[in-house]
Amino acid sequence: MKGVCLHHDAGCLGAAVWPDVWRRRLEKLKEMGCNAIRTSHNPHMPELYDLCDEMGFLVMDEAFDEWEGCKNKWTGGHNVYPPVHQGYSEDFPQWHEQDLADMVIRDRNHPCVIMWSIGNEIDYPNDPYTHPLFTEMTGNNDAGKPKEETVFNRNRPNMERLAPIAVKLAAIVKRHDPTRPVLLAAAFPELSSQLGIFDSLDVVGYNYKEHLYEDDHRRFPTLPILGSENGHSIAAWNAVRDNEYISAQFLWTGVDFLGEAKGWPVRGSGGGLLDTAGNEKIAYFRRKSLWSDSPLLYLATRPEAAGTAAGEIQSWELFRSWDYQPGAPIEVVCYTNLAEAELFHNGKSIGIGRRNDEYGYIVWSIPFERGGLSVAGIGVDLSDTLQSTLPAVLLHLREWRSANGSTGNVVADGYRIAQIEVEALDQNNRLCTATNLMVHVSVTGHGRLLGIENGDIADCDACAAPRRRFYKGRLMVYVLINTGVHEESTVSVFADGIPHADICLDWRKK
Image (cartoon, rainbow, N blue to C red):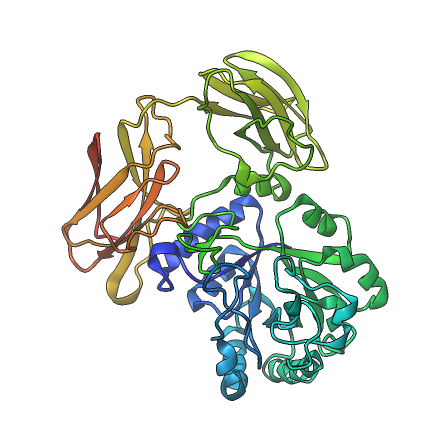
C-alpha cells in the first residue's frame, strides 16, 4: 500500500470541504501512484469514503488521537513549553464507546475501508504516559525538550494503563464489525510491545520506527506490521519495498493542513505532497518517481552551495525555476524512474546522467545562463523542460475539470463549487514562479466568492477576503454556484500591472 495520511481541512475553506475539492486532490494523488488513505486522526466527512470507494483507494479508518490522557498542544511553537491541554481526552470517558461504534456502523459498508485504527500515538512517551523503562530507551521527538520531559516521572499516568483500554476498544470494534482487522498507530513500539498493548491488535502500525521492523518481525512473526505514519526519505520507502513482511507506508502527509505549525506566522503543516490549494509540490514528483509505474522525468534546481556535503537533496530545497544570477553554480536535479537521462542546456548536451539508486534522482552541476534546460530519457520518448522567464504580463484562468470532464457535482440545495485555477504567465506563456503580486477577485451574477487559497502556509490574509498574493505564480479561487438560478456568473481577476482576466461560469452542471 502506497499511502498518505490526510487531515480533514482544505486551506481557506477550513473544515467545510466540498466533495469536489477532495475529488481534485484524490485524482492528483492517484496519478502520483498513491492507492491508500489514512484518516488521521479522526473519522472524516462521509463523502470522502464515497470517493475512495469510487476511485479505488484503500482506507485505514481512524478513531482517536487521545484516550484518557491529553497530549501537549504547542501554541507557542513546536516543543515550546508550557503547552496547553485541550482535546478529546476531555470527552473520552463519556463518549468513546458511542463515538467508536458510530464510526464503525457508519463506515462498515464502504468497501474502501480495510482496517480500523483505535488510536494514534497514544503511547507517545511522557505525553502524558510514563514508565520506569524510560531509563532504557529514547522517545520520539526528545531533541530540544527539557530533561525532565524525557525521563520517568512517577507523578504521571503509568503507560501500563493503555493495555486494558486497547482491549476494550478492540472489543467495541469487533462487536460491530468482526470482518476487518483492528490496528493501533504506535509511537513507542519499543516499550508498548513489552507492556501488552499489542496483544488485542490484529495489525500494529509503526510511526517513524522503520529501524525496528526486522528485529520486531522476529520477535512476533505472526503479527503483521505496517508503516502507519512515515517520513519522506527514500530509506523509509525502501524499508517497505525491500521487506515483503511490511505491507504499507502512509506518508505524513498527503496534503498540507491547518494547525501543527512551527510558529507564527506559519499557520499550518507543510509536510504534504500537495499544498493547501491542492497544487503539486516538488515532493509530489519525487514521490511519483518512486510510486508510479509510468515513466517520469521532472526537473528542479537549486543554487550550489560551496562545499555542499554529499547526501540526499531534500525536495524543499529545490525550485521549479531556471532564473538565477549569471554564472552562478546551479545543481540541476532530475527525479526519474528511468536508469539514465541526458541533460541539454540551450541545446548543448551536458551529458548523460545515471540515476543514483540510493537517493532516486540524477544531478548535474552547471553555471547559470538564461535560456532553457531540457532532459530526455535514453531509449524512451520522454522529456521535461525548464525555461527562463520574463516578468508576468498575463493572467490565465481555467475552471478545474475532473477526469470525467465534469466541473463539479451538484450537492446540497442545488449548489456546486467552481474551482478556478489562476496562473501568472510571461509573454511566452511560461509560469512565473517568482511572482507574488497581489491579486483581486470579484464575482458578478449568481456566484459567490467562498475564498482564495494560494498554498502559502505563512500567508495570514483573511481566508474569505477578495484578495490574495500569488504563491509560486499560482492560486485557487473557490466560487459557490447556485444551479437553480439560470444565468451565468463571471469571475474577474486583477493584478497590478497586468490586464484583468475573466471567466464565465455556467449555472448548469457540466
